[in-house]
Length: 289
Image (tube, rainbow, N blue to C red):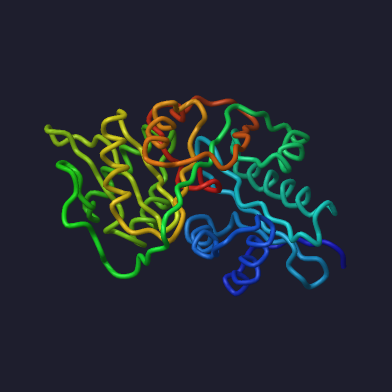
């Protein structure tokens, strides 16, 4: 039969998770990310099979003004055998049918040459920073005794205001993404308002990462970061940020984050302007932007 491609099914999540872990040499599961793809863009997640065995995975989310490709994974035993190329071609055809004019992704040094052959260009660099700490459980509903003045965990009724604020900064509306992270951990979704009641920024403290993390200025960004870091995390904490957001990089260095690696932030199609160098202090993930 050779290589075939088909939509990801929920029953295949555990197998795909094992491939993602092996492909990226990860220390923890990405099952939550895979489930999120099925929740927010179920028709955009695909697997590659070799005969009857799953050997690859890739997904895309169409945000409207642009799409984001992520978590492109090939089993180590099947790398350099056309699996990644097949996945990329399929995803690009799927996006063409949806008339998506701009496609973004964050590429590793190993993956960047493949994307370049399909017309992707580097427009920025994404820095992966990490802070290590003793492992802590995030089970239950623990929250600090208090957050800095102006910062609260946001409630369901605040979500639409956060979505509107986020869209102006991110460059597209991503309500389904933000709602899914909020639903996972409402107590870890933090909102800051100024004295007039306007949103200054927000952050979602995931189990292993700070992001999305959006703020109008560095002062708000720091208050949100400090509040987020007051919560317990599972081992190391990651942040993904543009190399041109110098305020974010200085702030993260002050809080003990160190650079782990650098990725190529690439685009294909119509070039667009976004606020990666200013108000976006942390991406939600490398796969979702």
